[in-house]
Amino acid sequence: MSLELPSLSVCDALVAVMVAVSASDARMRTSELVAIERMVNHAPVFADYDADRVRAVSQTVVSLFEEEDGLDAFFGLIREALPQRLHDTAYALACDVAAADGRMGETEGALLAEIRSELEIDRLHAAAIELSARARHRTL
Image (cartoon, rainbow, N blue to C red; front, side):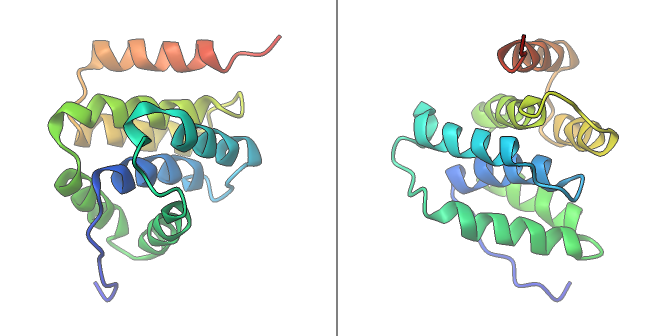
């Protein structure tokens, strides 16, 4: 791979997972970007995170997705940066981004399945996280 891979902080990895879900269908919707910004600004896990890093992390994710083996490299970076105890947190954040626009496309669903597998999220736990995300983002 020709791309120089950066090392990600724990919070960078969480942001990268959210950005990946948003970018998975090649259309980063405003509602998804607002959800990412809201989570970075308010979730306790991001309390000490420099929100100005979101742009650089986003560019890294988009660049990786343009590479032939980019998805494998992406997951390598995520697994390297994220402690196991935050795998479900990453999945929950990813589900919130996927649910933010009120619809989940095939590519978003496929990437969530891959994230679930790569982070070894138990299927029953994943179903609860997914249901919770849909409930939080439901509209009237």
